[in-house]
Image 1: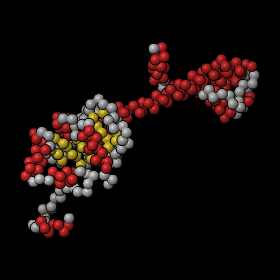
Image 2: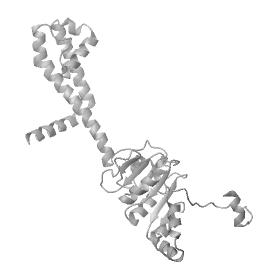
Image 3: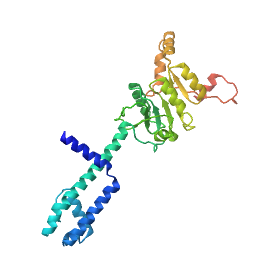
Image 4: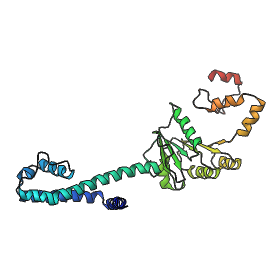
Length: 298
């Protein structure tokens, strides 16, 4: 218990010690030691600035004196009673401050409190559905010709980074999708595409409406909804979003009518396979033609 109290007390005081204050303490300690050692005629230590800085750094880091050490009795007393205790304390504070800074940076990435406004051409994945989202991200990253550079996973719930071992996936926890500051943290204006796949249709619908007016015009947005009412409303208010519906009933019916059709649909939907499907609008100025004639261009 005593050791824990000491550690927490040190952490609390180190968190209050700013970098400018720590730098000022170091400069003050070095100046004081320089003046005192000069008065005590320790010429070997203070004759050259490089030697003095080297000597003070060695003393503070507790690595020993090496080839430089006080030669006079007053100089040794000053070093033993003042310079060593204070320098070791300052060096320990510096190491503690650096470690706390590194831990804070790592904790931000794990807890989702980081800032990713520097990202460009990244994909935003809104929502975490456990294994479903993990599988979807792995399928997205499987494509070697993908247009996006990284995946930024955004979640409202208070969770830690669900995929910390994936170097291509960053994690951010969003408090409110309507907040412009959160849009900046997500790098919304620079994103390449957006997938909204939240835990519930209510969360998906809310996120889609909140982000619709702030996503770049060239950005492709895909939304997954199971409730047809939400899908219809979103199609009305956000026509440029591509809405993916739950087609399990339709697929089951088609599989009964045409055995094996589910396998062909699965092969088209799987990015790991070569088959795919897409839509291509025919310009209104094109004259009517037979479907067979289009096969020359396929």
